[in-house]
Image: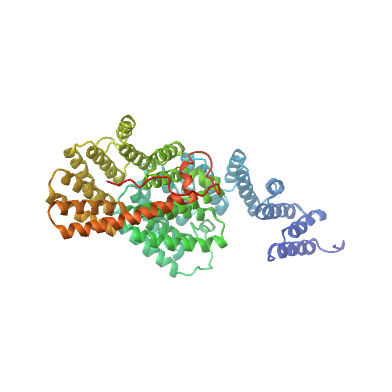
Length: 601
């Protein structure tokens, strides 16, 4: 192919050119690309060319084929040879980075860790690679749930970035550390976020990089508030975040590379950040009880995600999609769209079936959603089984809020069943809002008071019920928790009605109805309209009683139709899945509803 007199560069460049041509063809001709690269070895090339070619082959095979063994062999050779060559950093560290990624994919984490540690140790004179490898090893520890080691590495990275004069990458390391500390609910997250805020505001550099740091910082702040159930307090931060993402979308990506190689990182692509801001907005709307707003932003985000997923296979997009669906499913159950919620639960099952990691991280949430669906169609035994499964598969160390949410809902199931006293009291002991409440969430503590009020109501201890419900009202009003406010008002209205205090009952039920219509919360509307009908009848207001009866009839009809539609779907069989991977495509059509629509009163 080449004459003996030719310079080695010409045959090498020719083969490289052909390989690149085949790789970038449409569709790519990977087999021919690999042949061209393998042909390089026939020429007994010098060590540098040999190592680079092994890296190129390993990379092509890893990214474009399923032949991971061959990819691994080439990457191992590239890593081994490049360590013997001075000033060959790019090939050496790219080989280490890719090889450790491949090891992780093959579940050989114990091979990946020492490899990354060695690469980190010898890359201190190469700021870009040193930072990148530190991020990579920290991520590996995070996936293994070893957050202490991950935080230590991110701390090392932040100090290294400071020494090499990169405040931008220092902020990225510290914000990443803050994100992990928040997951562990550790106290030192406050001073760390304060430090990050100062660094981000003082950093003067590329506008897109600066704004993306601000988005990262504000997303952490917003989720920190939402974790604490502080829906009203978060509003200024959320507003800043939404303004920030608007600013980013007007900025053009500058092609100018940063002068400091340690600055060559970005947190997320602009398009991913937009979806993330929609996502936290949906989380806020859902918690605050602005369900139509949550629906609007979910639609926008899912549309954007569909477009992105056509061009980008990044796993974070599926994670965003699952979290969005989890929130919109809860909204649908409240607004009386159970059939749609069930189809979306099935969609989450399909997404989780495609990714074992996604399923591991969301199995507990999936069983929780099925439990909430079971409550809405009055299948209490299945609801109990789903919540029990959710508790079994959840990681209680990192998901304490989820644990408290599940336990609160399971307690409501036991209260409705009316014959599970022992189990109920042991649960209530663990979520006592008056004493050592297990999580810092304002919203969940308010819900725990509501559950106590509900139990006291069913037991006929009305004064005690009123005390608990007034606590819920005080807390939910303080943070604009509209759904809890509506539920507490209607239950208080019911108590006053039972006690014969019609005027006070009316004072509770009318605002409950108004709030429930605004949310809209179908079951509270049904409950309120039934109470208004009885109240007006008792007070001799015939016209108002007739109007309320008509409203109650309309809500009942809507709920009944939705109930029948949901229970007739083949996906309704999901309610009996409590173990193993998510079932996909195993549904048999039902002949009709198998459950009755019990009165919500």
